[in-house]
Length: 110
Length: 113
Image (cartoon, rainbow over all chains, first blue to last red; front, side, top):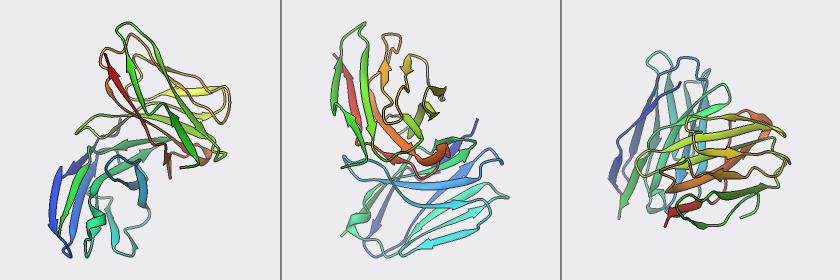
């Protein structure tokens, strides 16, 4: 089955700086890569996703890049704000199943 | 908080007891999923269902059972065979069983007495 590894497990950044989270996947057949944000005590919510035929996608302050050859993808958050503090999960889809990374706890320091 | 509803929010299980977690959605989604969330381990798939009256095991199905008698409902039973049931359980749904753009419920925290 698919194995998704996510790094780092925790990330502390100064407000206004950028944050980068990296994930690798094992199955070259995986073709869809979403990112979910889970604020404390709340449900995970989809914030951005990318398909295997696209190398980069951007939505305001967040962007995702995908390198199919190396089987890794990354989430970039620019100009971080306090509301960006949360746990972020990457995932990879193979057939109908999503396999999630272990999560990254992001703390934005004021 | 409309869309997908999980109940109860907190649940306690006694030794040897089966407990059932409820998940209801009014999004008209075909597919529904159950995930288990443990600290530091991300989300792991227990069961999923792409259509009524059909469901498939996920990565950690042992000790769990599900049913999908109605499109709107996908209850999860944690049986006494699940020896380590303490976790946060998340239900999700998506259109057309594609495993994409999952909408999550607010979760049930299950603890063992």
